[in-house]
Length: 546
Image (tube, rainbow, N blue to C red):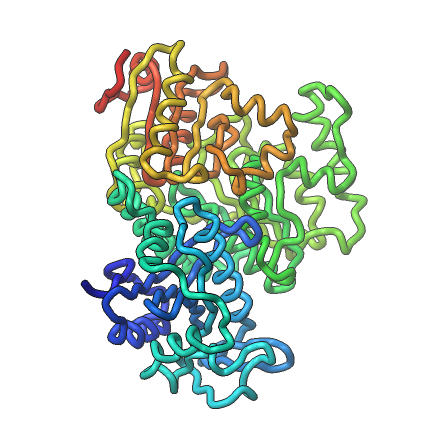
């Protein structure tokens, strides 16, 4: 038996993290565990990434946040300084949030039966020497720090901090480390290898996505930016990162999307971000109008939504006080923004001659019979690498689009095509979703998407409140039920697509392309084979024929 390391061959984002890993690794004992880059979704703080989680038998669990560069605390603020720049950081806040998120995941799991968890947070500053408390924040005692001058005894400091007599938490019951790893990495199910591979692949995808930030560095001096790319190329992440950068520069930014689901996701991603790094507005075009007092009358006709709302929003934007206008716009799903939405957006700019605009679009996902593009001198960037979907999923939907991207998302389980009659699609899709849960996928991992009509569960949920339906997108305890058009821009590790027909005026190929590309790791397509054959797809792996 030896220490458990995950991932087995870590792909480090920064050399500072590599040095901390190399300092911890040699001293781990049999039965200990070291996890790098673990990602969790916390209902309160959104997505959490843990640099290191150290599991020490006889001591407990420590979460370590790593900060490179020369780190100091001055004037109530942590600062990291490199040879070329300095910027504010939040190591202790991030470490605390990570610790509580990890504790919540474990202790709230029905598979956790090891009692209370002895845990702690720590920070690692591998480029900075720290000799006493005077160099640290008042709430940061020296014993929670692993500085450059501590690296030779890094694991000893972790053990000592956990075992400190001031830590009154009792040790967990025997075999607590194995139990924790089973929960965090979804081990111990009949499909443990598939689920563990998906978790490891997600870390790989996150690393590739963050590397795309270099694209924004290359075009940072341009006033107008248009990023094009297919599903899974990282457009939404880049949109979020661009909004964060401009907000951090002191600009008043509006981050817009077409769909409610993506808007809620973007809000969740910024929930734990300090105000000065967060856009002034995050939401849909119509939600922006409501902040300006433009609301629909009861039973407003379609004409109001397609034309009148844009006219009213233009008038409202022109009347905005200067302090309520924007310095920059970031528009995700820009292919769905019609031409008449642009006048109110441009009218909301404080100084149109200096304002910056970035749009992110995939014209193959223009499923709403409306599309537009303002005639601004955009600098165009095309993303050609699919980072999100497994090779099997990308291969399945690639016949639906003209340009095949480079596939970097790695391998996963085969795509399942499940044949049934048109009348049985919903029942069969329900069975497939239940089967995924039985394989070990969490409820929040799974989405069941219909191509035309709303699923009965979706109708019931939206009947209890449309706002609540979207607000529970990432914090519910059930499988997500939605339509493909409503889930555009979003993703889940496992997706069941129920082909229950197509709306008039919407191209079936575009709907299926959007639907199938929502799955990161596992895709199940349920429907009548004739419906797939009509759009150029064949059920090459048919199961469950009735």
